[in-house]
Image (cartoon, rainbow, N blue to C red):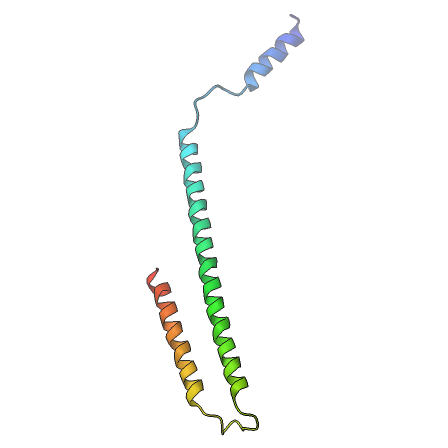
Length: 108
């Protein structure tokens, strides 16, 4: 073995990765990261599901207002329109907000 080969072997020995046991702390940290990612994905799916439900309810309320508006007789001025149905619709809207927002306030 010449000097160059000896030097190459010595350099390879110096820069070789040392043999070591698996890093248990790193594995535990990565398992916690994966568990957090799974929990975040579940929370995100739940939030989107709730959003779709709220959007459908809001669309239904807007459609009800539009239907009530079209059912009103033609030729009435704004002062002549009855306020009872509009007040009832607003009351239903506020009740819906109260029922929908209360679980959000309590964390459910």
